[in-house]
Image (cartoon, rainbow, N blue to C red; front, top):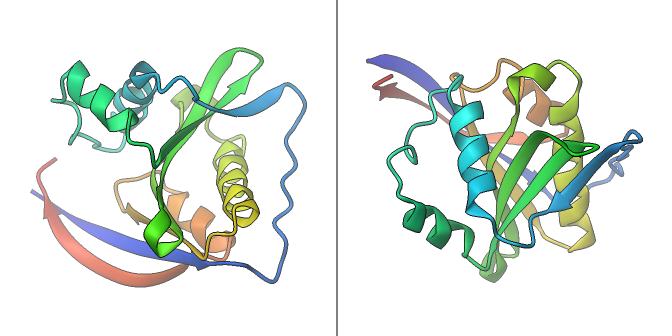
Length: 168
């Protein structure tokens, strides 16, 4: 049993300071329009291994397919040329005019290159363009050591904090 700090953060939109989204050449962030569950499953397993993501490890392919078929779920993939680098999943809560960032991560061999910042800024810009009122996420002390700092640096505010016991 491990004690974990969990943080719930939000960014209320629109924001005063425009987020500058500068994507380096040869990098692309694309929406997975094919709803290919294998992309989500791959990133969840590989990135999640370092951060104790395990809820979905027992999912069958049918459960993964049902998950990505959610019409409000979007999976965005970061690539360098055709190499996979990272991703994020967001769920649009249309009724509340807000977005939940469900998962976000960078493959281990690409960490340390500010790609987490890049895809978070992409998410914020996408939400601004679509005129959402709020983006929220939860992170914890098991996530990447800079995850919380990344959200705070993009003006997310902590609205709830808790300690939970986690079986690692």
